[in-house]
Length: 351
Image (cartoon, rainbow, N blue to C red; front, side):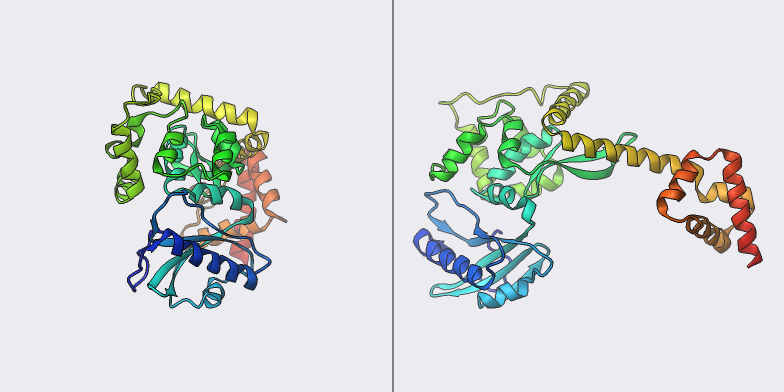
């Protein structure tokens, strides 16, 4: 993804040659691994040349990127998490191919997210403003602790239906699918025009000066992102939306995020359920720490150091399972907690 992961210098291929290489690579992989979904990432129709080839490969317990590389007779292989970059020997030189390990339940979303250059990244700016995360795994919600916004509890899935995600962010999902199916994303301008069709767009949210350091460094290197910024500056013939993100103060931004969250609860009741469960789990964990902690155990028993650690482990393992342990300390009063610690301390010291 990017065409510069290999030691060997990767060439660029004109569209016609790229199409041949893509067809051969996808066909070869499907023949060797017929049990997996394998799909090349879609490019806009008039793209003139390519610096690499991205292929999604359905994951599984027996996923082995090295075997895929052997099937393609790769000249070089670089493993980097879910992305495996490799060199393909073509008549013109070495061409980079990236295999992207993709889970089955997010395959369709990933196919659309990665397609058309920075399309997914640009759409994701709106999701980010709402406090959500639009990525290859789906539309996610980073849930943070109510009493500590720096503490990420979980990334909860709102939906892995790309169309539903687009609609929630203000886009015409049917138009997207029609343009995708009919090759109507012909150039970057077609992509950009669709990106700014949501009423939640505001030019300010894309400017590099308004991004955090990590995002600014990343996107400053992306040719398509920079082309989009230039395109925004040149727009006189269309009136761009100007949703009031920048003007909103902290309270207003929080209200915008809350309204978005409430909308997702209505549209996606399963998300509401896991959201509530995650908060309940956090509340239980906090309450449990008040009743079961080393400071309290030391105060009750007088133990410290290694013995205190052994006592904490012994108390936990004295219950038949984790659920019984949690329920006891969540429901017991201070006297019952004291008795339990003293009982286990006596057993520990007598052993």
